[in-house]
Length: 276
Image: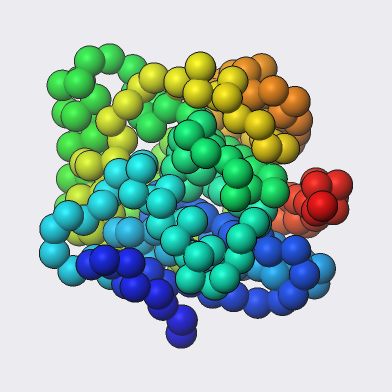
């Protein structure tokens, strides 16, 4: 099980296949297993490297600073590429991982052959309001993970899926997909995820001027049932020069679980078009 060290962090990653290098970063409560439905498909033609963000999966952070912020997570992605000796790569992101990827690209996208943003936004808080409103909301959200175990959380999601699992629960294949999500989530430490939530989601500003500075090829994928990220995805597509937007009919927030074949095909086609 490979790890690499960055200061006080020990970051877990998985590496398979050969060809064009793709680094993949998951969303909240996710880890490398989020990409499992697409890993083998993309790995047939690409070198597919997925990592666990700080506070998630098997990644460990020993002592402060914990780095549960968008800047540090973005730097972790590039540090992984450095560790593996990869000068340029395609970055595939989902949700929170996309927050970090797009914010990093606003400052420097010179390492990215392409940037693929699935079900994500350029703001790091989808909750509007002042600092206190945002902090109080995420504090309540974090407390939910500390109060219930994973089986209880998945039981609640099954009854009240909310914006993240609406597409999963409205699918005829919901039982299988929820099972995949449960197995993925149970790898994580709920207390660490709660700490991550309280620290990471702070900025409701989509940073329009920053989006306009991104010069690498960008593919944006969202679902018509992704109630939180549909409009932010459209905004990014309008503001990032030359960005391409795909909206999946009948799909919600978890595109790698809900539409793995289509996502893998679209990702591979985009990578093939920008592999120079």
